[in-house]
Length: 461
Image (cartoon, rainbow, N blue to C red; front, side):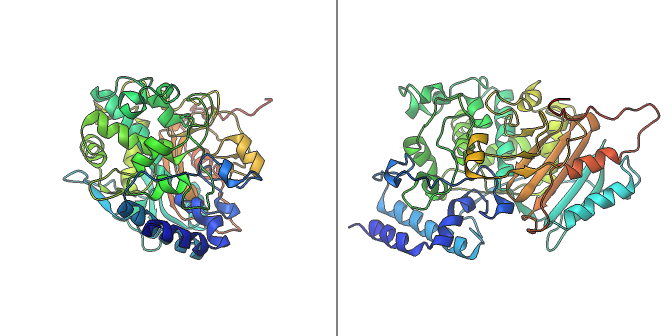
């Protein structure tokens, strides 16, 4: 038996039941507790035998050295799952340089902007009680509120988790504007030539990498080191794992299924389309033009592929600038960085799931709880989704939404951006996605005759 096979056998015994329940939830930056049933992570343990699971990988195409490193990472993840902490560090990291000179946004005096001071105080109180690390409210050209909690400050890099997914859509938009990608409807196989000749994979379009309709095996819990969900996350050649081994379970474009592997393929496409490393492209084509601070991104091995579906570390104001780029319809200081109409395209849901566009969640009709996985799967496994206690007060709201309720709300009609990062709220204080934007919109001082925005539609009204 090879050394890596011996280690794998040992790991099956090592990973206890509590760790197993946490394992893949944490690979997506999630936790299995009810408060954190997030990012489309739902159980995969059906009555069918594990051998019937298309995610179980049979045989390995990589060296013993690569497999041993993968299993070492799997062990670290399992140990973190036992403690509830998950992976504490990403290794190795690759620098994503920002602008040479970063001029930070400075907040205006509290209550001197468009939003009433009492509304801002309520926003801060709601966020502060729920394990928030950074909070910003931008309204109509001014930073009206900026707060950091605990050990966090303006320069602290935030572990993005799935905030990285809307960044992939912005990166693709920039590549489109530069002519590296022809259109959203260009086949992925034009760049991932390994898929040419595969009848199903040739149907996968660039837009499917952004709207979660690749047809890839969906995200879920996986208990075995042989499982594709773990290998696609932790393997030192995770891009090759996804290209060669990741199952396609639906024809592309026919079904919405949340999948980290879907977003991970964006780094592959960007690198092959542009001839630049993913970190280099983000740095030169986004962060530097935006005057934004840079950070670091997890790569699967030194000089290897970046994880674009998660695991980029950036300061809060960099995320704010990315949101403002979308608020300004893809322009920055009068320079167009994204194609005209691209942001509007990002905001369109699909027939398969009207609440998800290109990397962002959209309002559509009001529902009290909106999940991340396909709604049928959420209902099947009893995953409640994120609470929305009331309709949004603006129907054009769209948002970045990642693990632990890390959110960036963007409301074009109100010229409003709200950012909140941090950990999952305490069990007795559920996160409510409608609170922060509705407080800001309701608390806005309006000129005489200035109307409120059109609210989110409610079914039946």
